[in-house]
Length: 161
Image (cartoon, rainbow, N blue to C red; front, side, top):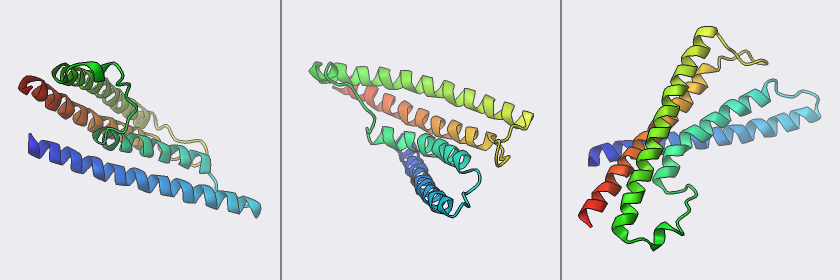
């Protein structure tokens, strides 16, 4: 279990680094486009590339954010509960979230396969769209793994307390 958690944590950190790189790329591309527009030479497809990079930023940072408890959480109800019940609620919530993201992963893969088979490409750059949908699936799948591990850890705390 500890090796699994370390592997998931390492993967989450790696994907988060890729998300950070995508943010920097978005910033540089936007700045270059703004500057080049002053010389009437905008970067073609900037809007599409920013959208594609945005999918990377969001999907690749989900697992790390969950590991760091960086999501918004409404705890005013659960903080009043005894520790054991609170751990049980966390376990169930993480499990339900894992199921949701497993479904998102599955549907993203199905959508990417469909886009690949149909040959769908972006309008301006005619770039294939399906790799980015696969990226969403990978990010969602990694988040699903994080949530499953968190659910197991919370369930273990529930039993031990």
